[in-house]
Length: 201
Image (tube, rainbow, N blue to C red; front, side, top):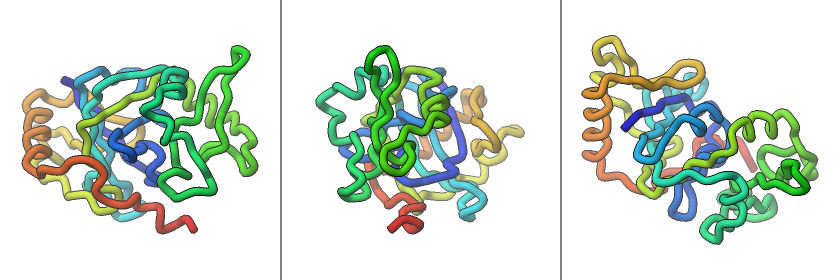
């Protein structure tokens, strides 16, 4: 098992997308999506700008990995294709990429420009690696996540919370202690609203 930690700078329920019984990471953080394997944990913590440093946003245990085309066509994930005229859960769907005529198609979404105009910068970042992480064992608190225990903020000089980019290669005992603590919360699935929904109409 490996543990990946990063700061969720923008919490809209898009990356990750915790809806419909699956937590998926299909956009942003391409290096984590490339490196994480089945059985690994990915956690997102709150950002300083929103005064949430040291709080969990979500934690997911990777159950499978898919290509973007597999994700796009899989019947389990059709509800994650965005509909900007529907509820916020649907508007922030992350199933937005597939190939057509050997090129990437980006759906009208949170990562495109208004009117569905493709955002080439987001396409380049998101598709750097053709990989989507899927979890059924996860907890997503959004803006109401628990504080990470102090002992995991300074564990033999290691802080579970990342700064820029992401962190991995924590001591094995630290990873085990985190998973044990997470289990003690008895939290599963979608629990709280994304923090930044308060910024959208």
